[in-house]
Length: 313
Image (cartoon, rainbow, N blue to C red; front, side, top):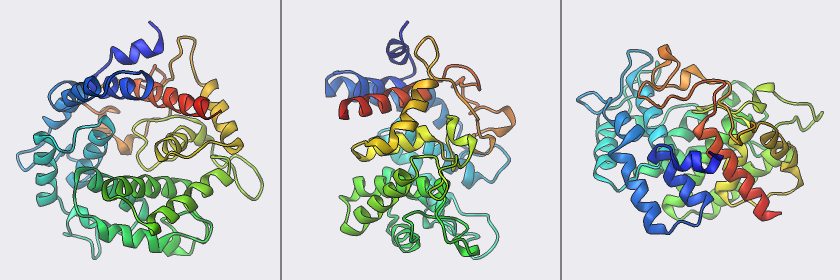
């Protein structure tokens, strides 16, 4: 079975995106497949793991954090935000999830955001996708963009340079907000500066020396959580409609080199802190993505990145 057929034979969360991004399937067929995310497979099983108050809770870490991770994954799956299942889920989290961190944010609603821009970028993405008012987070993030175009959670501790990790989280959140709201000149300008931050560094190298910033940038994980890697950066540029240029060539070659003999990409470098159940090193609802084995998520993202690059070239 070739890689595309493998994706089309997968869970509805994968299948509808493969149909949309990698085939010429009619829009009504794509929409019908997407609707199944709420009622079948991974999406339905993840929704079924909630407590009575609508939050997800594995005991540790706090339920608001696990709930944010679960909503991020449902967004990745493409759960239709207008569906009854999505409206119910987001309403319960909006009403019941508060931050348990120490300091002035303790007890504040999840969708009010927190202090770190990497966290706020993720809250912004979920809130924007599911229709929650998160305009206050947008204003804060726009004011925190650094001189080099990036963002950094360590700025409050004196850092003067952007971070790939923080920057990709903020960019994804602002892009989702722009899609949901229609955008603004200020958000567009911030997105463009942030994209240049990635591109000037060729998606994985230091601007000053050209050295690889972190070997982990060459390993493709999912869920990515707050962690940057080259595939995540490229998939963001694709989603943002950026025209690829020579500055992405090395990262594209890296994606090509990670493909196995069957045309699939493995799961690499899983981040336990970003999983709904870190104790089992899995998302604990039957998704069956394991380190070193072919990954539907990485294969889907890599194939559409290569398609985006190939079309532009």
